[in-house]
Length: 201
Image (cartoon, rainbow, N blue to C red; front, side):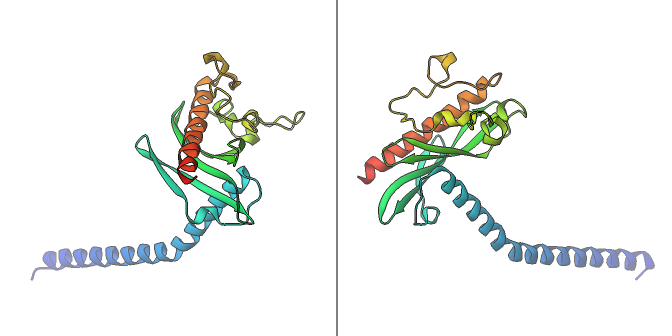
């Protein structure tokens, strides 16, 4: 065997060894980090549910109800206290945002009123569309944020459309597209809430 052939074989063996070690290491890292990552996601979801619903004492995130819609899925988390239903948190979405998909969690009381809303994910424009986030639109004088206008309303009684389009929602200044998208996500959540809970009754 020539020196050139020997060097080539050694290079192949070294490459194989490096690949095998890398694959094994990645697999090991995945196994040891998967559980903490899953737990962090579970806690994040539970915190979002807690943020949008009255007090509850069950584990809504353990067994969500699923509703297929628009080639995707809504997740509905039923909350109870002392065995009594207190509300439903709906993980909803819209693809009508200025910069793509917006995901939010909307909480409804048992009567169908919006209790609160929190943002899960968005890519809206900083300083404009990102005011859907409470901390970005919080007014120290009033103690309210832009999304506070939804709290307490029942979507069956209020037109969830921005005023510019004839509805009752005040749009974010210079971010009408984002505001429309937010309304779309909330309406989708309410439709899912009504469908699932009417089927359960």
